[in-house]
Length: 422
Ligand code: AMP
Image (cartoon, rainbow, N blue to C red; front, side, top):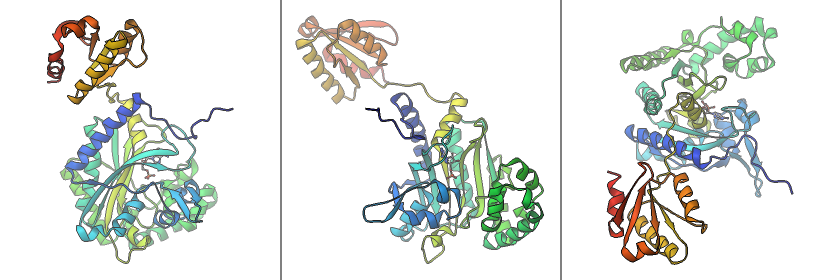
């Protein structure tokens, strides 16, 4: 029978890699706490309608990338491709706004999109993200940007930039779309098929196009910044001013649009310098219209971002920032089988109860093989327990790191090992 393999675009995160994930996740959680964010965990799957309405039917995600299936009760279910709509749904469903006018929520979760797998583009990938729900003030936008920056900086990343733009409010966008369409119309026949399709359905997404001939046309396109209403302009100016005051370097990118209708005001991206084609580390913005899009009766202001963990790992690898594996094992107990093995097994339990990490022989191998295993396991110490050691209550504790050895009383073992942790 053919061996079953994992699904294309998914990854097994093996022990030599999972500790890198833990390191990143722990750092993310630490910074989230600094900014007063609390974790939210929403279901891995939702009603398809949430994403169709929340993200928008015309987006690539909804039109061709979602893992959608019908369950046994004929409901259309989708594995979440992103977490902003689920978090907003949870916020509304649980009346979180009543409990506190400002809800600062974060998540670290897998997402699912049926894209063409390539480096930095997977079908199951992982994001950390934040949603600050309640405030309309530009301070909230900037706080999310600073939070993202602090995470990258805490991890030591230097090769990245922040790109920012404003997509205005609904009125700004109506004005801008009209100007953009007027500009694009005479060039349309020379533009790619996708751009031609988007001309009527969602013209602002055309600005995202990477096609060369579209690109050269778009370089002369009108900029949304010139179509902003007074409110939208003031909001953007305040965001930029706060970034300046906090000494954040950024680039204004007039073509950065998160082309969905619910996005408002600020849009931004964290771009990794050494990542090649898939260079977006994360992206976010303000989305004051999403709540209504998914059925809320009243407007709910919100701003947030989502950032990819696989791409962050790639960026950290580029800069050599990932820590070396640390097995965390304090001691390997080697025995000679029979009663000595039982005694070693029991000693291991005592040590573990004292918060000491222990590896013991589980294959009944020779002493030589056990010592090889002790070295391979990354244990700091090895303890050889034979009949003589059990009788006298004294044994040799080998420091595998320093290549030293000393004889100690077994009754001092706990203290002796804990001492090396200080
Ligand atoms: P988005 O929700 O599309 O704005 O994505 C936010 C971030 O998630 C991106 O900047 C990437 O870092 C990451 N990301 C999005 N899609 C994928 C994917 N298919 N594979 C890996 N990372 C992804």
